[in-house]
Image 1 (cartoon, rainbow, N blue to C red):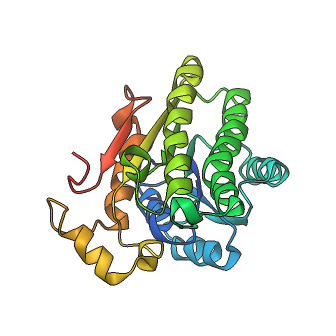
Image 2: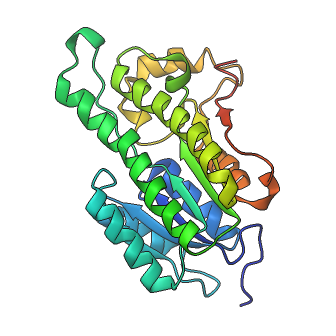
Length: 254
């Protein structure tokens, strides 16, 4: 079978949070567009399932178990990816994230710290390590896409930690966009609304039904719809776009 020809043909992409939800959908979209995908997740079994589901058109996709909040593990990941593919990734998607919801007055310190550590610090560490590798390999069409959230834009009850982390991701994105532009590396963020993922399934059904009723498009989004936006920002179709935060929420936050 001939190799896939697409807007990411031949690109090496590293996707965190690739075991499920939005991360897995991004991996699927990238593979369909011809990218070689390195699937990263703390859930090694889920990462393996994703990578194996992408095996087609003679492309070789790999999977890695990594705690994105650990600088040592992230550093070793980049070494392993470069050793296996003999080059640095030219695309990074930071989709790894957790929630530990609680009302503000009842939120425990460790709930706040844990979410910031994964969602914000993890995005920082991954972006810094991959960017350094891109610069060393003189990659001039690099693209970093960070998954933020509508919660980081407007806040959300019970998510002081999550909203703070995702607002931080947007600030980090804009700063990275300014600093990395001279190296040919773009950095953008996507802000999903309520998307049908394992994370949103933790929300009580009654509450979710109320939220859906407030969405102008009158439905939750699908992971593939976020993946389409990420694929656009990762590709040369968005070659003159950097530092943006793109809302993908069915109109809920307009």
